[in-house]
Length: 257
Ligand SMILES: Nc1ncnc2c1ncn2[C@@H]1O[C@H](COP(=O)(O)OP(=O)(O)OP(=O)(O)O)[C@@H](O)[C@H]1O
Ligand SMILES: [Mg+2]
Image (tube, rainbow, N blue to C red):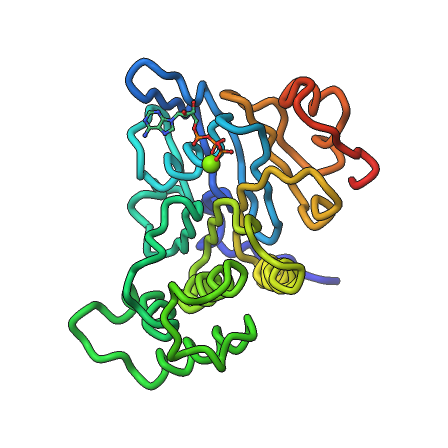
């Protein structure tokens, strides 16, 4: 006979895994950018935020990270996400990065270690090892002394991916990381995303390419000022949903799902 013992310490309800967005709305003065967004972003999955230009994709990511003022709640493991930003790596849309910034590749990647180490303290050997491994992972180890402004778009994006990896975060947020990159970089970025998701991380990616790379996403959020649909790629990527989000603006291939 087997005896089932109930461990009383484990009976407290666990906070839900993932990021829970509740009734989130954003207004930029008179412009309504997002209206009553409700979502769950799950760990262990690659989640895409899709929608046409101006749909509010970047705004959703920024509002989740407390970078634009909003109403509603964004919770992670039972607490507001804005109080846990040390667990987040965020790569803004390219247009928001100053590419003339006079830093070399190594400095940019080491910035990923600042939250762990603090600005004024010396980076540890472990931090340097982590940064080195991150650069090697994106195949940029030979470029560490090069100024970031002198690299190709794809190389720059890989360096920023390495910086994100070096932070050793739980939540990775990327805004349009595929713009202006080559096929090799595209392959590396998706490999890294899959590795992060397999390690149980949250991987949230703004994208608007509805081509074949969509097959890399596990879950989708289809946005146009409000959530048109969210869930698994198969649930969301339907003609009806895409038509609602994009209207007649694009040609898309539901076969890719
Ligand atoms: N700082 C701002 N001030 C005023 N309006 C803004 C601001 N940022 C964005 N908007 C407006 O809010 C809406 C959503 O913008 P957002 O940048 O989130 O869209 P997006 O889906 O990321 O678009 P894109 O695909 O072009 O990057 C748009 O109408 C935009 O013009
Ligand atoms: Mg955007």
